[in-house]
Length: 212
Image 1 (cartoon, helix red, strand yellow):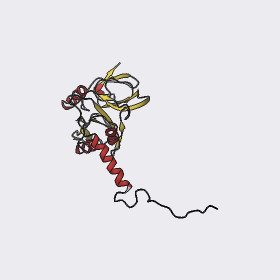
Image 2 (cartoon, rainbow, N blue to C red):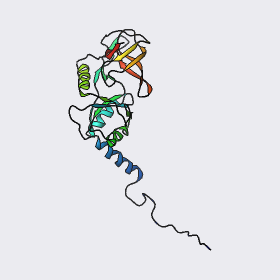
Image 3 (spheres, rainbow, N blue to C red):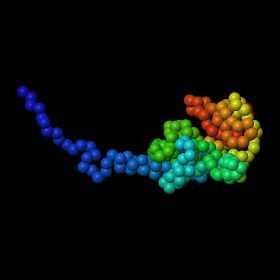
Image 4 (cartoon, rainbow, N blue to C red):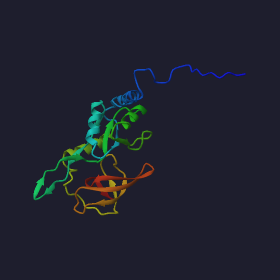
């Protein structure tokens, strides 16, 4: 006859320790993010991370605080007119929803950055991230700093349905089709592109678009 035991031996996992589950996860995320603080060479390529719209500067500041090399090229946004009064333009990101980062590439670094608040992912994915050359990033930043990408600066006019090529920034060289844009040759256009095995719509300044 077999007797059943009603006594359990051992200790439950994570019980009795000073670190709970949430604390342990925060520590793991912090350790992975620390991996992204390992600097790459000055001529190494950059990676683009997708963030929630309007959170570009917040994410950029959090990355810099963690010791991660990051940049958000800025430009002058649109002027607003209300009741006959002109509201001066404020500075906004050139590419809405993106932050450029550079670090020694590793699985831990990509997971650490991807796990940050307001971050939606890495352009191209963590396994095969899209790389942007240091030369291109420097040119992109210089154009922004010199006012060449300002929202109010008139450029070539475009129409809905036109095929275009992106000439600067994280999507440099990609082809797409204009979904919508203004008729006064100012501001941005919504461009639809087939990339990374899917269709993506991106808000792109008209100043970095070329007709195909």
